[in-house]
Image (cartoon, rainbow, N blue to C red):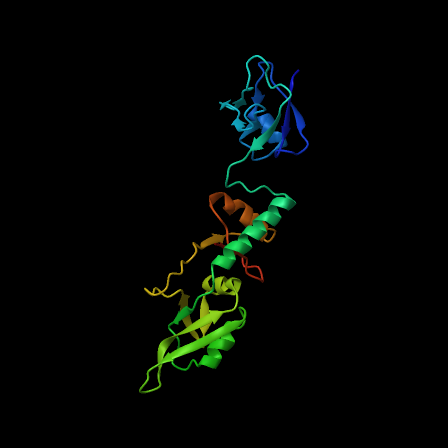
Length: 234
């Protein structure tokens, strides 16, 4: 029986995987040792370039029909969106998320439907439960001084802003809407926020991040505390 030397990444210690009688390596054999992998590649000794291994109908074919797999060490190919659960990858994912959050700066949020009695102090007090409030303002008529029924709030952290955008708000006995203003002068983009229902208590933020990262970059995961059987993924 022939064996193929396979490592998860180039430079790591390889594992020998058994090849089939026809010299091919089953994709299922590869995935049993490296979950999520979808192929193999290797470093060509002559050109120093990376070459891919031919794959067809669940089988990986040796690069040479004469020498078979040879003594080369092959390393795994993973889908670009695939996030594997290892400590190193988790750290890289966290660092990447922090860089994304740095780019997504906090912006003024507009609060619509405020009761006439709401003051700037009471507005600030309400939103301070979500995080540091840098600014809370109730817009008023310049002549009468009467509230116009809306205001603005700005937070000190992007995480606090996303928690506010992911929640409903009962302010002074009235349901209010909080969102990013659709102003021509503002170039802020609202991240795509997905509601996830029927969550179980053992579901963690890392579980959600790992699952949804296959569809794109995940910038925030919010699970309400105390547990309420739903969450939001941005």
